[in-house]
Image 1 (cartoon, one colour):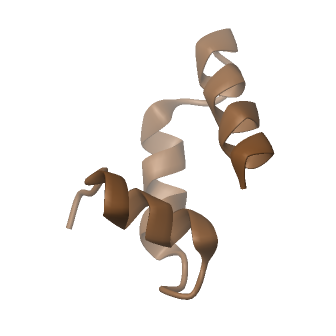
Image 2 (image 1 turned 90 degrees about the horizontal axis):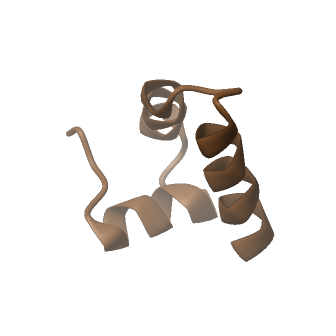
Length: 47
């Protein structure tokens, strides 16, 4: 899971993907998804 988060962070910093795109994708993920659970645990939410 850490390599995925690092890849996302680097992509956002490089400007290849917008943070809003990441949040939109995470908002549609299943509750069983690891990134969804991490987002909920860290309080990164739009719900």
